[in-house]
Every structure is written in C-alpha cells, then in structure tokens.
Amino acid sequence: MSKLRLLIAAVLLFTPAFGSTLYLVVPNAQTSTAGNGAGDISGIADVDIRYQEIFGSGQFSSVPGSMLIDQLAWRAAPGTGAVSATFTSLDLYLSTTPYFPNTSGTVITDTFATNIGPDNTLVYSGAVTLSSAGCAGPSPCPFDLVFLFSTPFLYNPTQGRLLADFQVTGFTGVSGAFDAQSFGFPPGGSIASVQDLLGSATGTFPSDGNITRFGYDLVVPEPATWPLVLGGIGAFAAIRRRRKI
Figure 1 (spheres, helix red, strand yellow):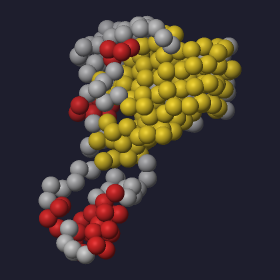
Figure 2 (cartoon, one colour):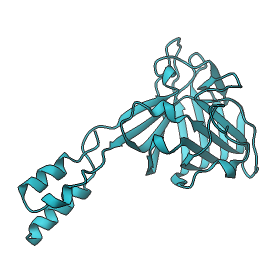
Figure 3 (cartoon, helix red, strand yellow):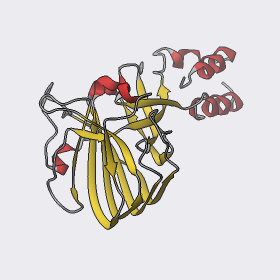
Figure 4 (cartoon, helix red, strand yellow):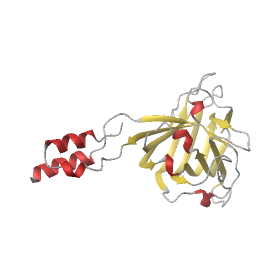
C-alpha cells in the first residue's frame, strides 16, 4: 500500500465520528415529567461539598452498545424560580461502580472512596456558573444547566452502574432549585446519592438525586475483519461506515 493510502486510512480511522450527539434522561420516567422533589439551593454561601450520584444501568438499556459521554445537564424544578449558582472549583469524575442505587444488588455505601470504580476519570476541572430562567410548570423545565466535559467518558452499561462524583469548593446558591426525584427505601429506585462536606470520608445516603440528562455518542464496535480490507477503495468505504450513530 502506498504511503498516501496509509495516510488516508489513518485519517479516516481516527477522525471523530459523524452524527449528532444523542441524549438520555435518568430516571427515564422523568424525561417528559417533572420530578417529585426539588433541591433548593437558595441562600447557600461558599460551601465545600462532595456529592456522588449513582445511576442504575437499566436506565441505559435503550443504548445498543457503549456510550462516549461528553456532557451532563440538570434542570430547574418547575415553579421554583430562576436558578443561579456558582462553583469556585469543580472536579467532576465519572466511573463504573459495582454498587446499586437500590436493593436489587449491593447498595451504594456511605463511604465515598469505596463507591468509586476502577475506571475513575476526571471529566471536568474548573470553575462553573449555572444559570436558568426556570419555568412555571407543570411541564418540566429545559435541561439548560449543562456541564460540558473536557474529557469524555466511555461507559458500557453491561459492566456496572454509572457514578458521578462532584467535588466542589466554594459552592454558592443564589436562588432556585434543581429538579429531583425521590424513591422510597427500601427498595429504592433508579438513582441515589451520597453527600456531605468536602473532605469527609463518609456521607449521608438518600434514595434520591438530581434528574440528569446525559449527552453522548454511541460507540459501534469495529468489525473483526476490517484489517483484511485495508488495501484499496473498499477499505475507505468500510472505515467510513465506522461511525457513532
């Protein structure tokens, strides 16, 4: 194969995939329905907090493969006014955890370090400003409180549950409330959380959490035979078909 063909093949293979970002809301039942709770943040001033939220893998059953997650978003609770909040600094990690948000398996512990999965990845680090006009309801507000990752996270729902670990310094909540969902425990539901002051080894476990929308690209496995066809035009067509849908 000529050097030119090798170069073209390499470019096609490693160029980011085509297609628009896909979205999925957890809990799925709250995609078009407001939650039954509201996380009021008004009046919170310059607090350092740690907040872990776990998402049941069954909520991702509609995804036919692995997900390359590049953002998550929250929304205002309807009828609670505008949301205004700042994080002086946020370190946000995602990982695949063996624990569960409910009693269908071993429930997430109250120890932050224990809950973290082996693929723990820092997806964002820096200051954050959240602002939303909110909405009157009863329909849910838009997911306009967005955390865009600097490093995407590869998540395969068949390998465990998804854990988001927010480590925040200088959280200030001026007004508003996050849309949230609460479940009776036991057995619990599709999400749960652990929270306390930053630096604490353990936290409080509530069977609830913020309703979250994930933005992702779908990762389609490469056919096992693709290296056999790298010699000509067929190679380019095969590689171009490799895409995230």
